[in-house]
Image (cartoon, rainbow, N blue to C red):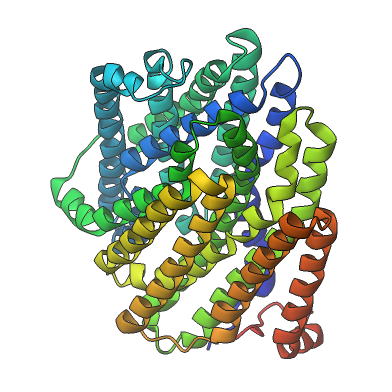
Length: 490
């Protein structure tokens, strides 16, 4: 097996992960600025929770699975400049057209949407609905372009686009709150102006270079591949955001819960960055022959799981301290939720490990069945648990649905493409970490254990388990650390 250049891998992983999380990191600056006495409080953050859920929905509809589609079809068109240009133009033109359709739908349906909100501020949907569409479409354009940059290994372009998008959006969010409306509406309009300006620049620049063309042949190929992925994204949206709508009747509690989730979004972006770093190499290995590259695929997958767990656990205490130090209102209560809210995203990293081979095999219909089952479980548990347990019901629903998703995708992956995983590392270890977090949260709410002591205990146990599980690999890594092409993680 050709060795993996560990130094190069970690270098790219660091770049992709940092800039994938960069917009969320900037929010660490934005939220304390706009939160506080005389500024935005828990109820306003509850309103932001609902608008973010709607923006993400518009993002999913407009992108229609295209970021994953272009990452896969890039390998079919990369040897033809003409074919590549037609692929890129078709994808971006499709996103822009879906954005126009969404604007029309919002215009037509605003009166109906307004009647669905009991909250007086949210019910004025016509005043901010168009900005939600612009934000969603802008994210879709940026996500698609940077997915191509990763596969082309155009690191500089990836960095510039990611940084510009994050800075513009955050800057105008603050401007919108302080100079337009001291409410979630100002935040929404600012995000739309900042993100939309960067996305429009990217769209015009890219289409000028590739030409404005819509190839129906390419569009049909991509649609067959992307349609189940669209449903996966929609289902993931349901698993992640449906709880906001179940909790909308109590916007203050929703604001506390969603504040913890806003930081968790940063974790989710980090996981997407980590996955983006390994996805091209895994696809490349599968393209060259999965059986002969089985060891390399295991190496990359093990590193994805380990890096995900290490980053999640390491971020818990700093984020808790940040909230305690810089927040002024009742939103400080969200600090205690950080461990359980963060750790549950370990299951998302597991899902990506088993889903990537299925995705490469273009068996996306099977992923549709897996994710539909998880969504149904999530919605049912949210409906049953949230009225009684509040945000703990939402947390429980997310964990159970994600476990169903992981177990099911593992079963499907084995049927589609057999890979000789070390299941202790990619299956059992992550679930143990989640179980420890659940146990710690139970102790905190039942007998009043200090949240910082529990978070420290979770960190120590997690890294101890990691050291034991990877003891042989760590010894080998220490012995060969100066070599540039090694693969000790199998």
